[in-house]
Length: 208
Length: 410
Image (cartoon, rainbow over all chains, first blue to last red; front, side, top):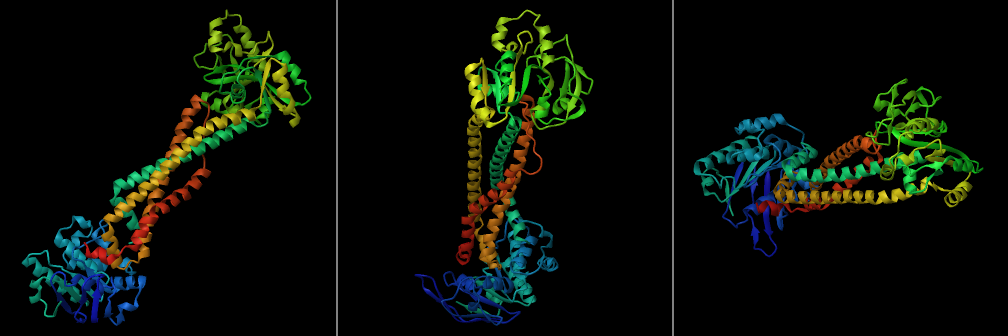
């Protein structure tokens, strides 16, 4: 599903990054481990097409990201890539359910409230669907972020440090939740983290 | 989830700054629409009453006062003029027709004007009920007088001396309502019309009373009465046969008689230029408030943009094109301006309603508003333009934001 080759990136006046090749199949999860400053978030942004690599290629479900420009890239990202950011962020002025609707509409997909309800109840937050984002607990926000990443039925979900703020018990629960829901919906999962605790849980892991 | 819904939700989220912007816009739009409507209507009303009157002849004094009192019936008369001189003037071949006016009395704030039936013809007044006066003390009511005083055909009333409701009543003689006019949209609607003879007759009775000389000077009201013994009327409205009249006669009257001639068009232009300063000032104030409103929209959008830069980056990561974010900011601004415009139109109309009910009593001037005024039509695109301009820079910022760097520095 996701294939990268000899990916490199350098910030202006910064040290260049060289990333190991990734090859993730559908329903598969890969852990990308690395300490701060190793370019974890940079890699995630490259994979999401938010930035262009200095060298190398990214191929997603047979499409080379580099061939997509401008709005076509945005559209492609919206439809095929789900992203869970480090600090779950939402549009504050609208409810959880409306945030999910917005994600579909921005991706150019039609409304699918039934699927939204399914996801929310799978994640155990269907009773919070009318709450505003800032009324949610941290755990609820994280679940909502997963729901939003999955609402477009993406081919791949990218997660940035989903467990860094959690204690051991919750770390385990969230990791399980990610694995179950993401791969359960047929998407490939890439988790970028420095959290060594996750190493035990995921067989496939790459170190930066 | 449409962008417009999101724009609305965002405005609701920033309630206070939204309210501030809407209020400022509303007040600006309201002032401008109020001023423009009032000045247009004043203009219209003044011109309608003046139409066909080339010259007004009255006692010497302020020409503007003469016009205001004789044509618009809003100021006190300048005095009386001797009938003998009027008759001499009327013989001038350049005069097409002239209408005598004698006044000085009122009933419940409405002036009782002695004239002849030419006055009715001049203002194209038609009878809703009854007919023109035949005898002394017969009166014809203007449409708004009849409506307000609830007087019907055959009703009787006593006039008051002077123009205040407090003036002493002429108890000894009563007026009989013999006709009621249809609305004409002119000064005739607000008057109680009668024959010149009625005014003379009623003051023959009054003149038997001893006169108070000081009251004369202070109020100057007694002087205004047309009196038969001396053969006086208060003013004469004149229509010329040709423009030649306006070249010769006013000067002749002013130089060779004890009377004064005033040209309504000139006096009203002078009045406009006086009032115009006030109107222009208020209009500028309204425009300035609208500009401040634009600034307020601009600042609140820019502020909310700072606060929401992560949200906007998030939307991009969810598939929104930069142009979509540009559109979102523009829509928020337009929505604000539309709300401000609506509030402004409501404020303007409420203002006009208030002025109308207040002005009706105080100045016998009523403004009416039916349908959509021109000013309301051109204020809409103007307000929306303000919205566009105010939103342009914030929208371009949203368009250009580098999502990757925003997302990295959460």
